[in-house]
Image 1 (cartoon, rainbow, N blue to C red):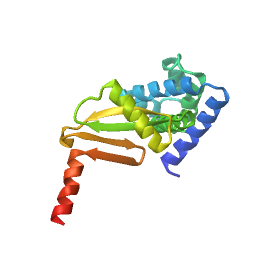
Image 2: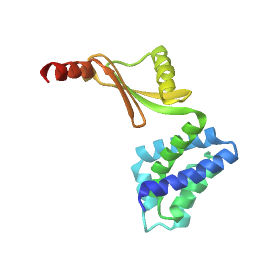
Image 3: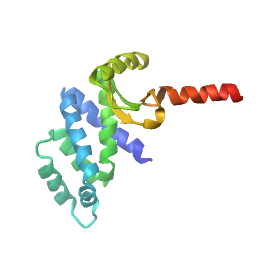
Length: 178
C-alpha cells in the first residue's frame, strides 16, 4: 500500500473526529503549524524516526513539543509513531487540510503573476475563480514569475487557467507557423 493511501486514511479519520467534535479550524491550524515545524526542522523528523529511541520516549517528546496543540493532533502523531509512520505526518496534515477546505467550501490556489498581487486583486481572483471551481473562497498563494510578461496563471488543484501574455503569444505563434 502506498504512503499516500495510508496517509489519506489517517487524515480521513482525524478529519471525521475533528468534524464530530466541531474543532475543524483549531485542528487545521495546529496541523498547519506542525507542517511548518517539521519542514523547517528536519532533525525533529529524523529524531522521531530514529530506531534507537523508544516509542514511549518519542511520544513524550511529541507531547512536550506540541503541548499547546489540540489533543487529537498530538494523539495522531503518537499513533503515527506507534505504527512507524511518523515520516508521513506532513502528508497526513496536508491531506487533512484538503478535506477540511473542501468541507468548508474553500480551495487552495496558486496564482503566478509578474508582480505581487494587491489585496483587491486577490479578492477579485478569489471570487471569479471560486465560481469556476464551485467553491466559496480561495486561499491564494502568489508566486512571482517574470517570464509570464503579463497576465496571470491560476492553478487550483489539477486545473490550470492560463491567461498570460506568454501563453497567448505561444498560441499565436502556433497558429501562424502551423
